[in-house]
Image (cartoon, rainbow, N blue to C red; front, side, top):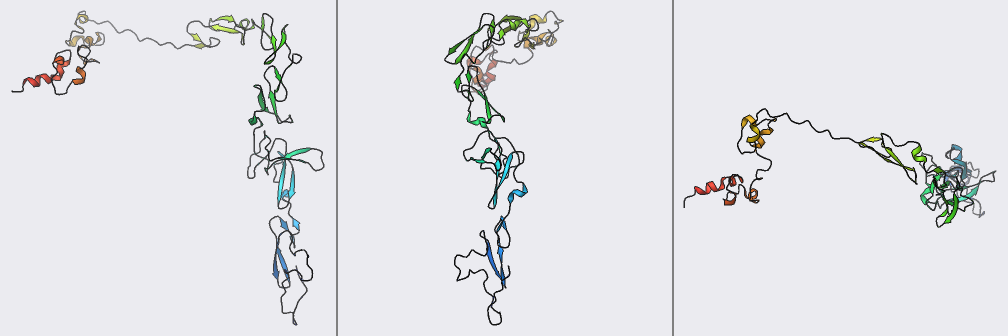
Length: 344
């Protein structure tokens, strides 16, 4: 910006063009929107804050020109001073910096309702700037009485409840009347503490008497020779499986353990009498002759024939234990033999 107001006899004095005139109080500043005025020789320059432009910072830059809002999830971009705001579609919100666009399910409490320009539609304007973050509407568990919640873009609430039989309403909050519940095949409706319920005629079953009670076995569900019996509750049959089969329909085979083959017969007839006699007979120490009854190897429990149960504890303790000094107790590891050699 150039000024034509020199001072001095020879115009040698540079005036501060950023200073407001003394006589004109209330004059607007040279630079608008918090711009900083920088004095120059014969004029001044404005340094504008982010979001503004122009010689006097009078122009507000439109951040919406760069299309920062997700086009799939937002309805409009609102220009703000040095900022912008995305107007999210119903069911969307977002956080700055996020890239993934996804559907909301819960309306967070920082949202406000505004109306779109040139439209009679009002939407929720949430704190997120780019309309990307996902929430779950069903996290607040709006469906009562055991109802199941699911996200629904066609519902004004953003979710839909699938109610248990006997309950109705947007949130399954009320009990159904018998006018709303249909009982088939001659069934009758009665009000209970859990809402309307169907009482079925003999031969029918199901929440609305929609099944024949003998429908289960008519389809022959039991496989592999299983026997089918009727049941009054779903699936209205029970399979009694044949040996070797299991499962709801006897469809799973039971794994059987195969026994190993019997060992061959011992070729020596007298080995049977020599087994377990405490003497190792080498000709009988073979697999067919059952290893001579274990006479040629140390048994799994060497003290099996020992009458004193404490002998295995005192074995090899360098002390003679007379009750263990016998063949069945392994001679107490010969501790008593060493004692006999001591001279007194």
